[in-house]
Length: 91
Image (cartoon, rainbow, N blue to C red):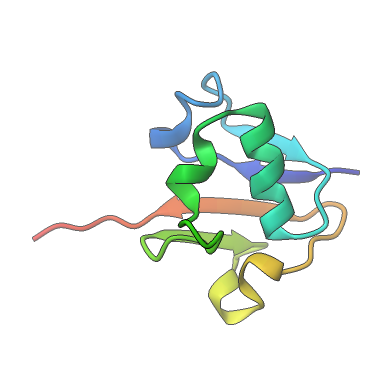
């Protein structure tokens, strides 16, 4: 069973408007690499030059923020749901 990644609206232009994408990765970092291989350009919007998730991008695994887990090394298991949520600023 694959893991599901919820793609936020601003990134759907890169995924052919797909809201839910399945990956077979073992970690968040591998999931981003797999997304990049299928949807070129998506990784640069999610990770910095060191491969770490950008600070204005929130990533959750089953509603848990990966910043409080092990970041991009957070392990994934079958059936997990990954949510990518860009930070929203305003004032």
